[in-house]
Image 1 (cartoon, protein in one colour):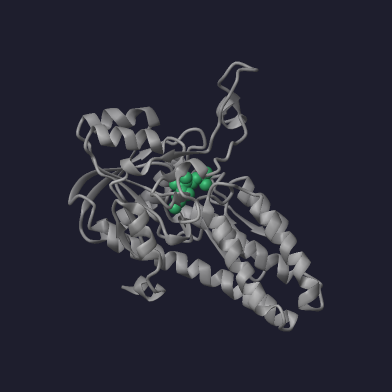
Image 2: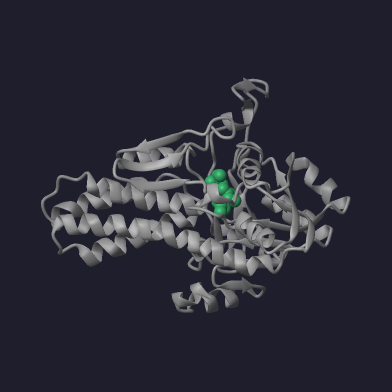
Length: 352
Ligand code: MRU
């Protein structure tokens, strides 16, 4: 199994996703600042993985603290949470994870420091295990929506590498294949960071899942030729009304899906659902370094000085989404009602 990130005695260890698919190397962060850097530089990426990385970063920062009391720890804890919160703005899992660590800290703050430190480490590890369980549950629910055979298109990487294991969108595909469905994955290349061609193709090939990489501008032609029976993608944040922020280019795929009457599914855990954000227009969209667009493999591919836009995400309006697959079940429009109802269900529903 791919270990995207893990807590170890010597620090938080990450597979370096900037080096894939040509090199499988790992980095171990020994400080919370290093964890913030690997999130910012996309050594680790993907909404659920970012959330758990931040939680582990907070636990690591606390472990390294010299504070003697909970009261002394508190300002350091707040400062570390602040550093983590400034890494990437769109994936709400980051803020969900910070909030969960804050709640834990509040609950523990009167305890002796070693106990606080240990409990925070355990909380981050619990989030890691829960994420894998959520993906497996999502897989079980979502597999029923996949065609018995044929092409399934995905965009970006919503796989084991974007999570703590198994994946959201790729988890649905994995579960469908485990049930005997004969699926062939079409992976959008996903310019400019190439999460589809570098990461999705890498992890699917490792599992022996039939995969074809296409450049983003080929998706419409593949749909028109009848090669795609369903589309499944992940999400970085889902607003209360069902609008979905995901990797730039997702919106284009969703609009094309509608034109070709192909179901467009979004697979995401509840840690990605943001019921406090009413609709997609309120989701902050990260703007990344123009160099990701101007250069390819270190070589300039645009004339120097040309204007560049590089939004990392776009928003797909809920009307293009056929269903949202969560660990608690499948939600269809009207999304606000369905998402709120499922969010109130006891967590025990997860195991079903
Ligand atoms: O910029 P990235 O690589 O972090 O963006 C990742 C995505 O957009 C994924 O589709 C999303 O986080 C879902 S991952 C399960």
